[in-house]
Image (cartoon, rainbow, N blue to C red; front, top):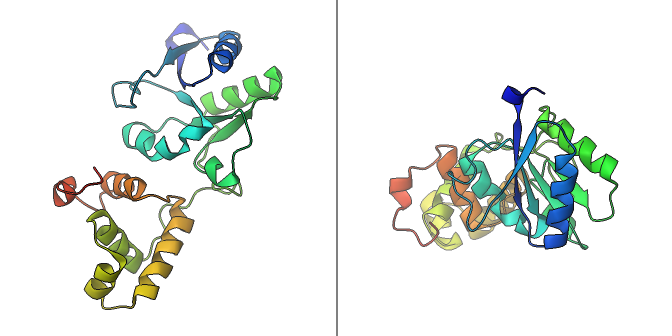
Length: 200
């Protein structure tokens, strides 16, 4: 890479020891500079970032990152974390992984070799929602209960719950806040329609 092709890697890590080690490893890769994300994630903090490395316990903030930039996200796993927390990371780094392996993963992602993955490693599915599932998402982000959504759609509560399980499986989003961000960023809902919601 030339100077004009320099890449920026943003770090949001809680352990000073892990942070120092990753900065050293990243320093060994030519034309890579690191920046720290202090405080909350924002469009300003993520502006011009090519790769993000965060502590795996921050998995819930991946949807927020996606609303600001499309840089791949690496999760750093410093302890046993359930597989469900791996969802959304383009790659993972384990605490006992070799430096060579870490550099290889980072180089691959900086070269464009990333696709969002589900927990099983397959590409994340974000575009195969049915019209009824989209209706359920709209109800959820507007703050409606399952019963209210069912009444609005003229279906049973069990049907709404089935749609919710399918949505979570397809999108790998398991929180109302995550669905709200998804709905806004994909144009499924206008932010003005939910501006009074408790979720944003």
